[in-house]
Amino acid sequence: MPALQFKTSINCANCLRAVTPFLDAEASVKKWNVDTNNPDKVLTVEGENVIPELVMKAVAQAGFDIEPVTK
Image (cartoon, rainbow, N blue to C red):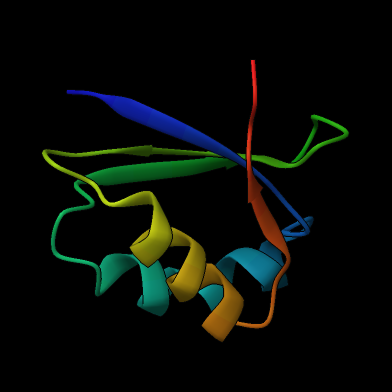
C-alpha cells in the first residue's frame, strides 16, 4: 500500500481523538498514524489512490495544521 507523509500540529491523545472521525471518513484511507514523538508530528497515511489534498482538507477541518513532507 502506498504511504503519504505530512507534517502536522497533531500532538497529543486529545488531538488524535479530534482528528480520528475526519480521517476515518476518508474512504481511500485504510490506515493512518501520527508519530507524536517526532518534532514534526508526522502523519503517515496508507491506502489505495489516497488523494493528498483530501487528507489535508480532512485534517484542516479537524482544526489542525498540515503540510506535505518534502524529501
